[in-house]
Length: 202
Ligand SMILES: Cc1ncc(COP(=O)(O)O)c(C=O)c1O
Image (tube, rainbow, N blue to C red; front, side):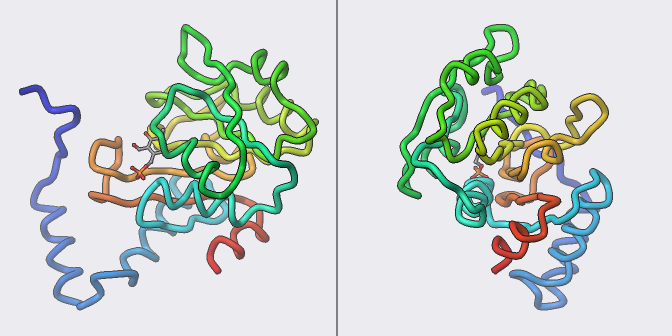
């Protein structure tokens, strides 16, 4: 069998797990605070809010944003969470096709599909390759739509020297077992917007 992604865990990780168990903080606690602050420092995110999954981060990003409109646009090539969070937050799902070369949302297709009823756009940085995020943000903001970057595959990815997740309004990461950086299960919402951060924290 060829594993999709075999986790690389060693003595350092075991020592950290033991330390957490020994302190008794096995849910939210000082290690989560430290993780948030290191993640923020390393990649330049204003606010980092750790979650129990990437799906939760996407869900929170919709709930914490002041959205107006009835549909959210997503690419059809992604994990189901990108679309499911729109559906269970009672938004229509609108599909925007991807570029054949990169498998990322096509800005041209977005330009044709977006309307004034679009509340948000969720591009995915597929397989760690950055989407054309600046063009996507420009088109979305022209229509007052919030941009939530699905960064689940793309810890450490940059677009023109900027960390992905900082160009749109919100970035959402997954630290699930097969992701480039894993906590077993887990995720994070990142944003520079104080209001969104405080709503998400709440
Ligand atoms: C593109 C994409 N978005 C969101 C998610 C959801 O992340 P999680 O599994 O941590 O809920 C995944 C996970 O597989 C993903 O690949």
